Image 1 (cartoon, helix red, strand yellow):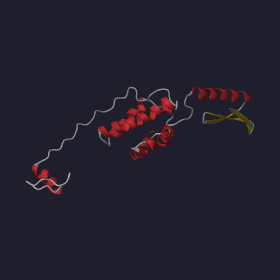
Image 2 (cartoon, helix red, strand yellow; image 1 turned 90 degrees about the vertical axis):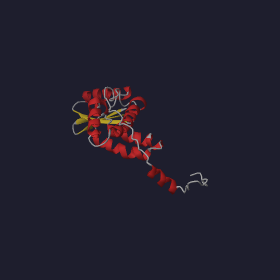
Image 3 (tube, one colour; image 1 turned 90 degrees about the horizontal axis):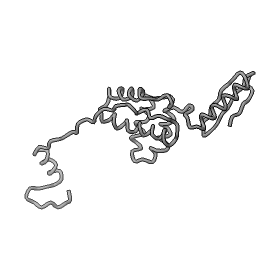
Length: 180
């Protein structure tokens, strides 16, 4: 509900709906009332009013990540994402921002790391779109992610096998005594 008060010869409007607070100062009472009605309608329709990526990431960390086994990994990654996206409004985020993030990360990490981190980032946006109703459009639409790096293979030579067997206590020709 909107609240209007006179403030230094002008009118200050306070709007609070669904946990979103907005305030503005207007010269006339009619301007203040019109702004209050527009702002309340935007909030009630589910459009993002003032929500930033930082808000979404912090809520995801608190509500979603805290219930996951990979909490520590996400606690390390999300602040880096906040550092990149910072206070960009969610309704302004688009494919340009995502592709810029992807390109900057590819300069310092491998393709597979970017893919893993992009899944976390995409999950944050999915929650903001589907559950919290803070966004209308998925910014990942149209963004091409890098391909997976080829799998790594390690060839074991007899010397390596012998070292492992010695460590486990295996003696040639003798029946093993432990499950190792």
